[in-house]
Image (cartoon, rainbow, N blue to C red; front, side):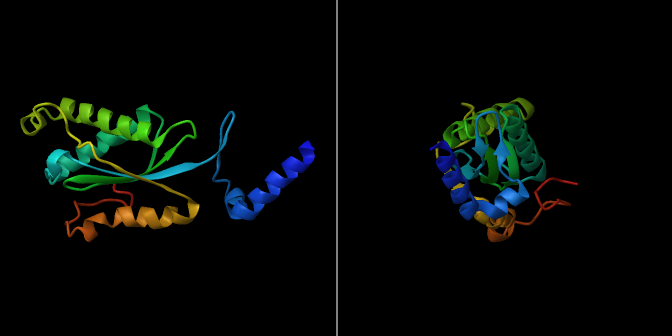
Length: 172
């Protein structure tokens, strides 16, 4: 009985994801195997163009990356635009997207206000991000498409790129 269930599960997985197993892209953890990739987008409060300058854009990007690192979230692509942020992230299967987004927004806001004191003039109550958010799960098939979409946001919104940047948005 157990061998049949194992064989059925293995056959079903081979039909769905032969190419992914060959690339070994699934994450193997203590009691789970799989991957959870998400596309997140969120805006600054009142959609103020707070990150129009390169220094603020870089600072917010660093704050988001640090918040992700502190909570075990892997950022695949991050693009900070003047009034909103796009990112593709990878979560463990134990993390919910709502929890991850809550931690990214909350901790990055705290870090930004600590590093850039003048931001309090625009946001005196300390609410950097709006309550709204967008989250969509993406798989291996859509991963490249979504990463390209996020990288092309500056062109899509007709915003000039900042200085020398690598394809994933990090300054050289």
